Length: 117
Image (tube, rainbow, N blue to C red; front, side, top):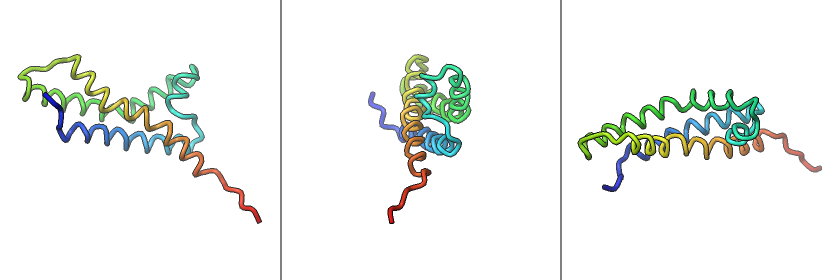
C-alpha cells in the first residue's frame, strides 16, 4: 500500500523546522556544521548528538506513534522494523541533511561584508 498520508509530510516538515532553528543557533554560536562535527570531531561528537536528540526527540517519538496508528489501521498490526525505518526517514534524515547547510548559510549571512568605496 502506498503511503500518501498527510502526517508523513508533517513529520519531515517539523524535523526540517527543528533543524533550521538548530542550524541558525549553531551559526550564531560559532559551532561547526552538525554532521561534519559529529563525524570528524570525537571530542565534540557526544555534545552534538545530545543536542540533536534534544531538538529532535519529540518529533521522532511523534513519528513512531503516528506510524504505529497508521499500521494498526491499515495492516491490523505493528511492524517494528518498518516503524523504525519510517520514523528515521521522516524525522532524523531531514534533520541531519538540513541542519549543516543552514549553519553554513547562517554563518555567511552573519559575516560582515566589505564595502568598496
